[in-house]
Length: 114
Image (cartoon, rainbow, N blue to C red):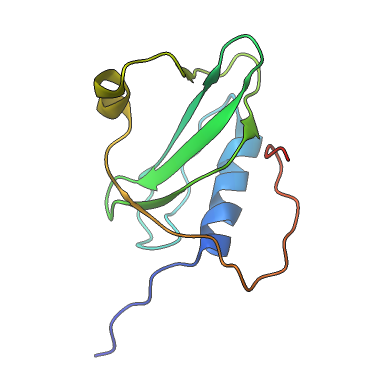
């Protein structure tokens, strides 16, 4: 039996975009890696500017991505940049971050800023 391949960053960013675009609603979609509907999105940022970053992972396989800078829609819960590390870690576990596919042509991803 051939080992299962790990989902690519591009597959992860597609799943992230679906969840992000549904905000402030919460939707359940399958993990691009293991297929379980246990994806979690945690936004961390500045409560005044609503700019920060996203941590997006699967609680089943513990794989995911972390975005660079992103807009955080008003009305969506976020953790503050000022939160102590130990408190932040209670919300975001240590998961394996899938690196970006550097060979893929860059495209705009909704919510991400330059």
